[in-house]
Image (tube, rainbow, N blue to C red; front, side, top):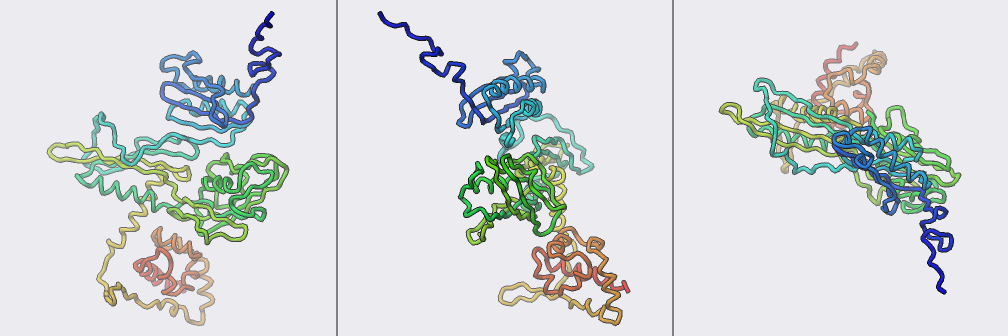
Length: 464
């Protein structure tokens, strides 16, 4: 007589369906997709297999209520409750979409007790070729005043700020001229702060692994590259990380100088799985553009990091044309995305100031003596004779006076002021200790700027 086939999940066959053999998943990925009419929360393992999911629609919400924060909070709670029962303790969060349920779903995930290694916004950004939709609302623009207006501004997370600005009215062709110049200034002329070098005695080479640390050295350097900093420093500063495991190392564990602050303290750096000490010396620098590490820049135990100083992650401009009477006019739309160290409005103001500083020399252009030798352009400058003004018996008294007069009290343009600060010139006495040749050799300092400095020094000659 044939034996009966055992049921699935019984003790005899011991398949996965049994409660005693339930799958234990310590780590996973939580995907939050928020739209204006629904919020979907999906939990997967590290390989991408779906473990649990929920949405505002499946929770019983209908119509416009599916896009509310309460519906998103309920959907996130239902999806997380299942994976917590399966032993999930750590997860990564991927947020996508512009809906209202983003923050509510994130709050529900944090209250569940799962440790979040990092939170990343994966909302796609429009490319530079995007244009406004064809169906536009009618825009009424005053023809008397030309002004900027911020029509939209939001912070999708601590590290992604978005702003949309309008400039109108403009004559035909002016919008394209301003838009191109502003976009280049936003992406290339604004300074930012980031980590440029890391040093540790326990690191043999960049692609090595350390016992007791889950990430490799290369992954730790990439995590340090993503740290967003805000500062007004000039030159380089030193920082450090000294943590004892086990535990998670985040941006909050970085010991910073007083002039630097971290935008998002929850950014992940490393995971210490054993009771070891992790000590890393960091170098922080403020500059503009980006810098790629070179093989010749490696030192003993010190490794450079690809530096992306640009606080503006993307900038886009578009033009809307309309007819005002018999005249064709234009409206300029500018969209700005920043990394959180600057708001879009602050980035727009700084880019505008940088453009103004670039065009100021054309407003004060004077006739100069030009000499052409071997196709080289040379300009003769007046002799730097201001040192001789103080060559008298009361020199010590004058030096004491100039020592307490800072250059920010003079009428210097912001760009010239920043150049002098980078060269460690803080007072008028520091400025007088540099000759005319030293000033000309300074980076980003032009001949017109040197003349402007000489004029200011001549005005200060009556300090005695």
